[in-house]
Image 1 (cartoon, rainbow, N blue to C red):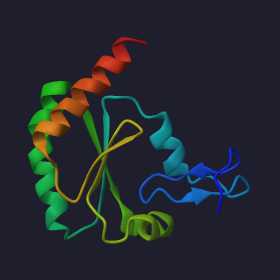
Image 2 (image 1 turned 180 degrees about the vertical axis):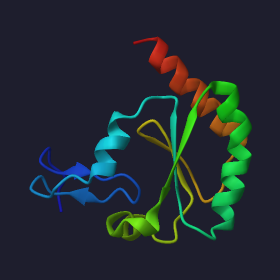
Image 3 (image 1 turned 90 degrees about the vertical axis):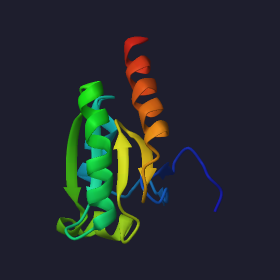
Image 4 (image 1 turned 90 degrees about the horizontal axis):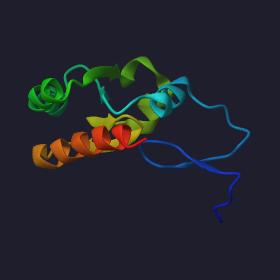
Length: 120
């Protein structure tokens, strides 16, 4: 399928969405989120999610970022989109990590997001 300006990429698995398909409210929220808003897609009992949350907590405090946890099991669209590919972490509207977090890279991504915001 050729990509045209009428198709849009969906976050997560980066599937194409036809223009007639409704935008999911979470996609709109994510697109509008700022560089200090970190979103963690998770589900209960996910040990990798718990590890990721604990690992990034000091960096979130350091950069003054807030964490929003989204339980994908509460939303059929998100459950379909992410399935077992969790945790997935976004900084603002940009995907920052999936499964495991490289803390050095995550720090650079937070720094970059902060710098992008101040240069606007």
